[in-house]
Length: 285
Image (tube, rainbow, N blue to C red; front, side):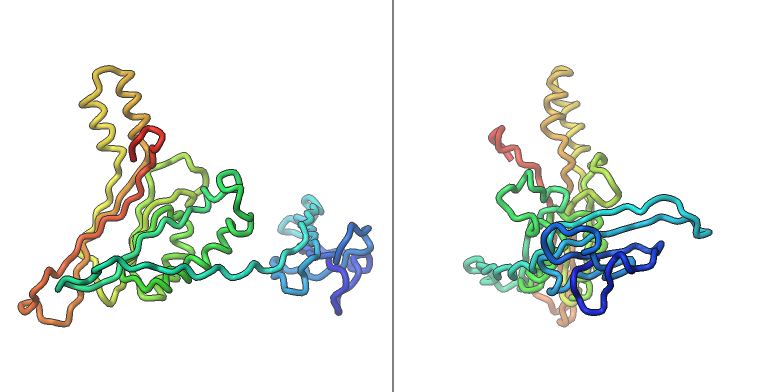
């Protein structure tokens, strides 16, 4: 329900509906008659004219035969905020003497994009909540990745569901093929809410020849069993080493128009992408 837009009607005059009902009010804390219905659709997109208004959603559940199940349930939002300012463009610094050799020239990027499951107000209390929101960040992340114009991109803290829904399809449209390796963690909750590493390569420059996934938990267990002199020492080693870290190893074949027999440089490169747990308190990484 909304207060004021032309073409809407007062809630008290609206017929009862089993569809979701969305409304808003202009300001203050009005009584029920000040709420005006603005939509009965399943989704509603805010516009600039809604800034400063609070919205209320009313939902009623029905069975397949149309009979009442429960409800209505009401939920009211905080006032709608205006769109945040565009993120500043980050200057990228090129490494000195990059590409000075006579080999294949390509640009490489590595980026920890901060998974949504870690982007909390508790972890980043100094950051505005809207800036931590994934829907805001993903637009800026993809823009920044495209602006970097890299040929190979190694990303860390890529959430599984975000890779499938956002990064993979949008960067594929931009000319990249990719692989994703999920952490071995199994206690992070819902499907897709586990992060990992993702590597992207420009398909006009490279072709995937080989790839391997490394899970560091397995060699950590083997090392602890082989070196520990007691059960307590083994538990201490496992507590330090079992961090669900993974790595991607890719062998990329360089796509070169020069016939293979006339090439003077290596035709393949090996790329490794990993994200290792930080143990700074213990004096090591």
